[in-house]
Image: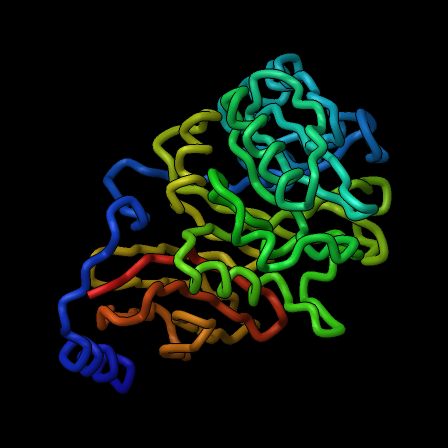
Length: 334
């Protein structure tokens, strides 16, 4: 009853009309389905410990519907793998490449999803120039870029990331044990970076990946094992372009273990419904400009009605055993 009254009160007191910038709302048309997938993993084609077939089977057998093979500066063929692993139509391998470049000793890694051909590292005159050149090269071969682990090697600052064009996806969680997701030593964590970029007026969607390299000892937290971060995409079919279009329009949530029953965003509100684990409790946060928590709910489903002055609103679910889910931002203004 208390939750119902709270939502009713929000609906009344926050009834100021909000205008949502076109193209930034993850709408929920009928006929869409949820597909769990990972966009960043490695095989023996670069520095992984298992063959592409073994890697594909691990994800298929653990409930994923799609996987991008993203070996360093290698474009692994997926046609034969799809013929074997996807023959029932319930699992899809998407070709990809982790374009791995450097500037001044710092690693600059960008994933190219469903690139039509291999992309060579483009080099450049600064970190921003290297990033932009590689993103542009990925776009030129019809690929979708996403910027990987900015704090790996403490390589990419918020200011440098804010200057990038033509990229919509940023890793806000990476399961590799050496990528400094939480920041440190005065360097912000990836979620703080995300909020800073959103607050500057740049729309960016946050993804979670496992960046798996080690499938022979997957449960060892000291190695880069699989199953640590993923996305759940809402699309009309299990097909590469449909999945990528959904990612680039914010039709997904990112997770380290929290599962949603549903998530909707309209021009009026965001609503989150958690698929609950009997052993856990949850906090659902609605977050706005500068990372400020606008509202926190202790039960699900939870709803936040836009006032119109938030700048953007995104939702986050924190589970009592440490798992998290991140929903995508909606740009809001009066």
